[in-house]
Image 1 (cartoon, rainbow, N blue to C red):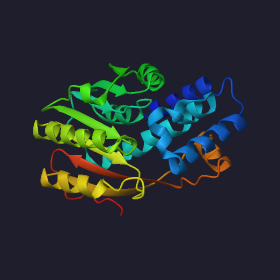
Image 2: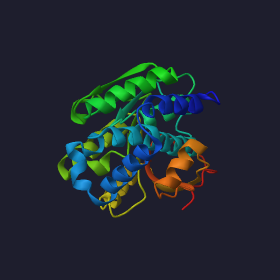
Image 3: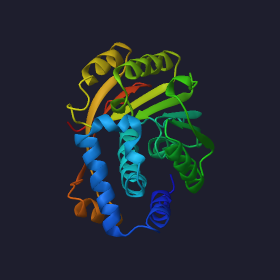
Image 4: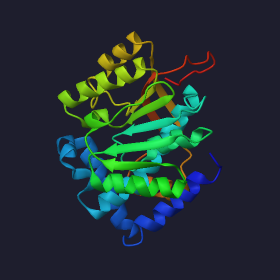
Length: 260
């Protein structure tokens, strides 16, 4: 990606989402969003993450860039963009951060297709694509109805599976493994917390049986000050970017060494 692509996107996000909110309102929105994900997860499926201007702004301006930076590091570590996929399908795309991070790491740029159950998130994802200059589309819809690519394509499900109920999550696992068998590269990224992902071990076993790998990652955060200031004000602590991933793709080079 061009060195300033992320910075330009972040500046555009700040102009877009702080125009009508004070810093204190944005901070409260982030605190409410954090509380939702940690303590009231049962409300996520009903769209509670996007039910107020403060939470929507915090999701787009804070969580989106944080997810972008995390997935970008995972993609680099796994060499997932080498060679460039022709098409990336982003399942539960949110504001498009994960798929965009992968797409911008690749040359030539792949076609992007995102889907999210939230109409607000998919509209925000389309805006992200425009700002970053990526070809593609994003729409609101059911993950089960998306046609996944085969050889030459890629699928990412980042911070998505933990928000699904057990039945939907089981269907997603089947679809991801089928895409892998068809030759697509498949990347799953989730928070490192075991409490919110008791199903992770089963997924890791399934990916390993299909020839994939499971990793846990710790990357230095070095957040831009606009994000670091909000992080501190909300009582959060992102000195490191923590994530776990599942990967089906080309064999990883021996020198790749995740930090446990």
